[in-house]
Image 1: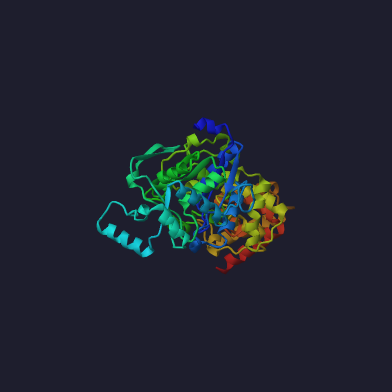
Image 2: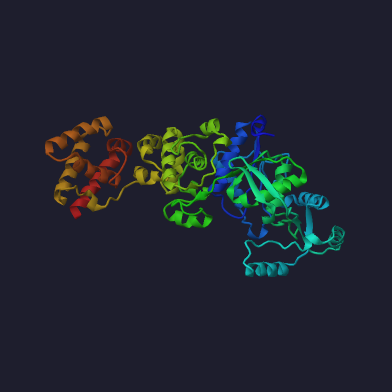
Length: 499
């Protein structure tokens, strides 16, 4: 079936993370592209867990993955949490299914029981390494056992695994949608283990069986699976199944562009306030719209600065425009997209998103004031938690400026204190502190005094906000209120007089 024919029917896509760690950028991009393809064609997006590695299982990992997908706005149609007609959606709950399929391959002569002990395999590995062979492979000892003898040994309870009987002659042609046909000589492929001695499958069997049983039409996965791609194609063909459309996505490179990005690199990223883990990005104040836009453009052949919402991505998405070229992770681009998407949010929406950062810092927030503050700081925000640096002074009873910051450039302490007193005198004489009332007399004072606006308003800004940089001064004063502004200005005068 051609690619065009596939587009005529709804696509069923999946992500199948292992709950052995954190949900990272690679998982997120796979999930996004899977979601877009499924939605574009009116199909379904599935989440299942490849949880057979019980030694590395991390409690809470499944919940984190589901939580992050919800946060990203790409909730699965089917999963262990959402149900579905093709479950169970955890591999440990599908053990009998893998046994049946492994036996089908054995019966068809495409797989065989292997009784080699771990000690023998380790000895074999060391001998091959000592011979400096190009690759370490299973030597095929149990491949030669008569099938009837092997069946008897299995029936007697002898410990064993099931290995795939890879053809040793000829070649395997595997078709990747982004890379075309990939030709591999079969002699270079190993007889990989399909079913472990504990009865649980390896990825090679589990994923192929699950994709078939769950009617997955497109497999979008990491390029790290390319070395075993011929094996997976051989397994699917051994069962006589139709192959899905295979799409091996581009690898992520470190920000330097040198070497593949790995989970271990996240510690270095965190020092700079970034992370490759989605739950971290959420807690660092990034919004899903910005993160999705950033992720989408790594490995998608559209302009690197293209600003897109999820709906706009859906409108434009095609697996034909994905690219196999490696993509360097650029955290500055993340900041760019996050800030741009913050500025696209409605005021009410943004106010609701930044409120938890204020309350989390122990500040009491009045919603009407927050709605006035939000437009003043929106242009400055890169991440949501930036709101604390720019606007926490609005909700404090008092601010404590650095006394040195109250001294205007080019002036001494006495001159700065005189300016603060004069401004206090002007403000206290006014009927209210609205922007329109306050600005004219203050600007008139600047002009008549021969001082610069930076000197006068700089002292006032630090006195009222406690910081050198703030949202627009007059609008901020109006929101803070007359009583608090005068109180803070008075305290600033006292601080200057004590220097």
